[in-house]
Image 1 (cartoon, rainbow, N blue to C red):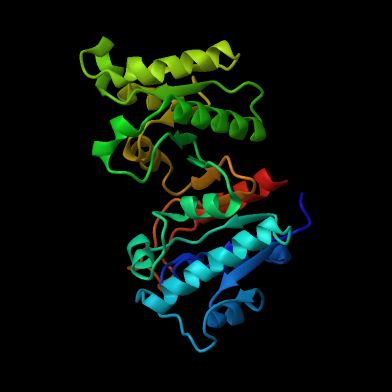
Image 2 (cartoon, helix red, strand yellow; image 1 turned 135 degrees about the horizontal axis):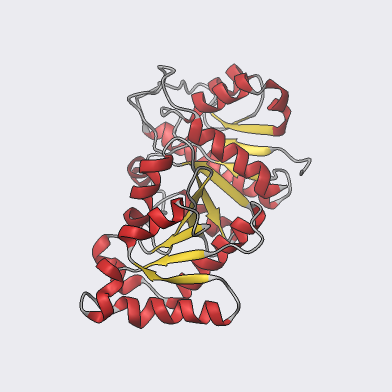
Length: 300
């Protein structure tokens, strides 16, 4: 395992991110030295260690987001990204952020995945793992109406190869990957759309020709059941909700978000800021625990 600590950003200080790390540290005091919290000064002081960002007089108010907190979230991400590039941190675990709030203070990215891809100069694949399912997304933060035009064979290939690398790292010798179709019944031979036969199938066939154990395009309404039955090690979903609706129905409290295909490891809980729970001690820590566990395994 790397001797460098894992950077853990606060996310939106008004959300549940700060208290999830505080709870994790309380449950794992022996691992405190292996993480480096990054966030507002009052939170860092309460933890007794970490890197403070933003105004020193800023006071976190759980459940009450503001622009100053959004700027702190961005500064924490910047410091974590630079520190990992420079070898100061082994990996990054990011707290949940408010995408609309970030956009309101000039943040130029639709999410944190795109931010770290920009800072680390890579082509990311958004994926989720840690529970019973492993899912990668060929497209993610785009409107559903744009998906058929946005999908390319290169995207399918990149997603599948990233999932194979992830599952190998997690212990599978030769992982079998399923690729969803974009249309109902994977297009039904062209009756329900042309994208599956025109774009997805050739990409899958090329991967198979290269020696990879890949199957698809498969109907999205049955492939996740087959995954849960053990037939596949992971599923490449074509768009955001196609993959995340089944995954979160099964693994909401046990899976984490991963940014694959980058130079460094970045994970995150697979939920949002949960302002309604912030400061009340009621937030479920399961997904955060998965993010921490995966960051350790993948950066080892």
